[in-house]
Length: 289
Length: 211
Image (cartoon, rainbow over all chains, first blue to last red; front, side, top):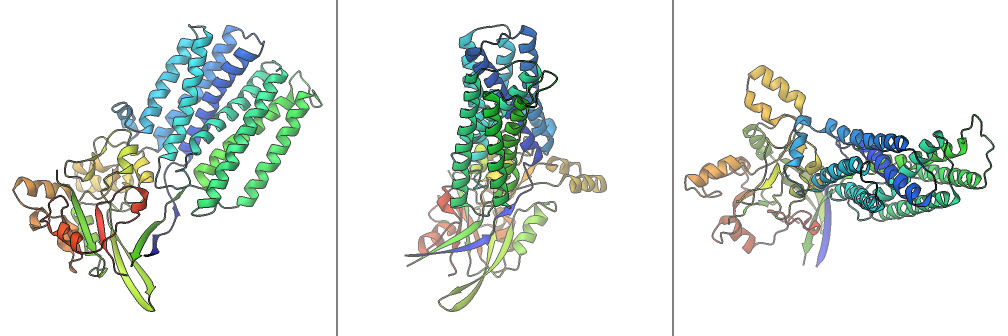
């Protein structure tokens, strides 16, 4: 038996899920990841004692980002006023499940202000991680886009969320005048390394079964490498306290690290939404005896 | 339960496009939306140049990826095995468009439809504004025909418009579960294939090969 494949439709760009989807991914990644980093690393590992008002404001800021990301999704819908219909069928699709987890996330952040318990914080962290994974599952369930339809994508969205959350927390807390212990920096390095590892793994998968190559792939790879190199130099500079550009009592190295981390995670998401989202090619397979 | 399906004989398709015209005319498909398309391909087989046409629409899969991703259950599989969209529930999120590997779905152009409603005062067209649309095997015709005791595929009044309008006799329609139906008999007698069945969607549109 011989097989013959005839291509009917070649891979092509699509019109949907552009900047609102990117905005949603970036905002919810920063919001959820930031919340996890703030509550886990700093609550459990740091000795920083936040005042209640600071914690409340930070949490509300991160929650507002997640809400903003959700609202942005409705912009692209053909019938935005019908968005509430998503609450009709919980668990009917990954988008519905994400909506459900968003509600839990929203409620738990509010409740966490009243229930000050480590166990409750751990439950929220677990729930938030699932929330990020489900966002990835929405993309990986899109059978029409082979570059999204991979099992690694949910883990990438999770790691990217952690990374962007780390970045935004570093920026916010540095502005508020807090300094971090070595342990926090090592956790930051570990998060970035895991993210880089998953990202490279995803790119390898893409290169194996890629239908159409992303444009300027060499340029993008070099951009990533240079950003990572600068990031690690700055991270080690911060660990060894080479505070060579510190003035006005603000640690500019930490802010630069945070901004670079945000740039990396946002660019990765941009790459997924804009550069590799090609519709599947339609082929005929003739089997002949 | 019946499972309506379509068989397209590639040898008989002459690429006239009447199926596309009949479909788009009857279902009032707005510009930019695609329910049915005809592709032209030229291949070389054993030294012979073979030109063939492929009429393609929604595959009405047994395991449809579009149904799994719909957040409002607007896309559903009817009791006749037809995948349909409830226009009153669809939010136009386009997740079904991206989930369909056959590129058989699109979101209706709101600008055109708004002008259409304004010029013709056809307020019923408002339902289609900004929602997903695709081939539904002319569900209204099939269901009304069944109510009248007609057999879709055999009786023209219960058969989708594309099948009715096919001048080459390439398209046939019927119940796959009924062993006496024309489509069942054609599939039993001939080798057939479905498009990208390796994805596990189990399409219900079958093709008789030309090569």
